[in-house]
Image 1 (spheres, rainbow, N blue to C red):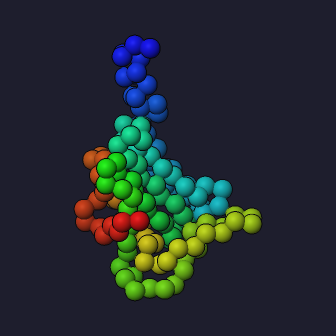
Image 2: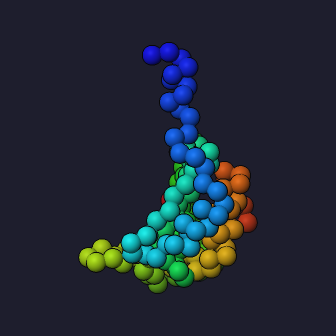
Length: 130
């Protein structure tokens, strides 16, 4: 195996989605048949990725940055103990603490757009090590 072949194996295997494709994918999340959207800058997962899970009104954002670890969005509900259902389909259900849920689709898309453009977590929202 040549060096050139090894380098080619490390290149992105999937093209970076367009912004319109990203918006459509996030807006299609319904907490059932379409519960999760994950993408990485430049189409590869080597530098990290961002995942959006949930349904309208209840989104969970999780980011992974190589060398820094995993982070999750933390909303304004600092001391909440309420559980919010983000996934429910047939026999499977998933709920998370309300403090990790973003109900605002516009805010979710802003966080996603920042990651899509810069490959980093949005600095204007709170992130917690997961």
